[in-house]
Length: 475
Image 1: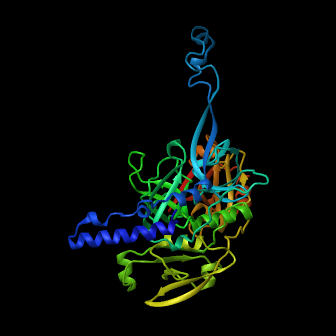
Image 2 (image 1 turned 90 degrees about the horizontal axis):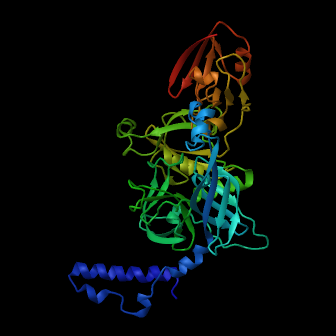
């Protein structure tokens, strides 16, 4: 049976000959496959190679419901006449189940899938292609890339795996296969091509840089494999564009280079580690390009640089336009973030920068965002407007997680109890506390000290998004 490369080698000449015949006005029928070998060209050898490494994932979650919407309907007299027919007899629970797909990437049972496939689940079951079922342990997840790593125990056995490709080598028009479990019908293989690369306008994850394919992808395919004709993992199928919930030929996959970086971080450190730039950027619009003398609107315009951060050490300045990372062109800020995020910490990256019309090459040190100062998450209690809020010191690592500006610092509200005093006075998670009664709040300890006293009136200033809000609360 022909190999996968043999498939492509056989198909392309046939298509080329067919195209030439059409252009020349010749008879098309003469150029159809004319031998048993050509008729037998198939993706079957490739599927046999990679399909055993694609798994089905089933999750289970128990949802607890309250015991009634109205105290009146739970009154003993009502229950005497109606019993529990109104469904108000007490708390109840229901079981929610969902399905998805995953890919075995290590022979000892390491599986990668989408985070949204296993989010909030109480139990995760992995079903292999040979129908064996295993309870899976969640090793770690990364919300920003929508990836998760699972582990199943297979003592003394080596499971089939799919190796990572270099997704930067993909080109538009390359043939790919999508393998997963759409709608729970069982493992399914579809074929297509790479329709586009570097899709950065798809708001699925924080790192917006996707492979687009027309291989049929449907609900249940999430977490499955997008495979090259060499049998390597091109990406993890993540989402589709659809108005009705079904496939219309526009699917998106997380590139293998990003998947590899996240998996290695989770397995080695328990969480994904993405290099910290220490700079904020924005898109280069046509007007900005004209102002800066750029031939076209491309790259990432640096708007701010954090002092003593990697970008500052590299010599990056506000007004610089980053146009390439390690020799790969950058079209917009999302592309820059992706290129940096797929590189390992501890190394360096070469940035090509346009500064006042001249090209400059800078060396960026790749480091994880520091946890300085320590977060010190603290729940505030007592008779004060912050009662019920959990606050923390903002540091580069937390700011990076929350997608905040690189210059963000101070104290941020990270969690809020529902119906707490803090919630009732209109404080919200994500608010950065600037001042309390005229005193600047720079650390959690400062906030705790200030709220320990109870003045007659509280005057609070917080930053919410791009606005500063002033709150006045009577004591």
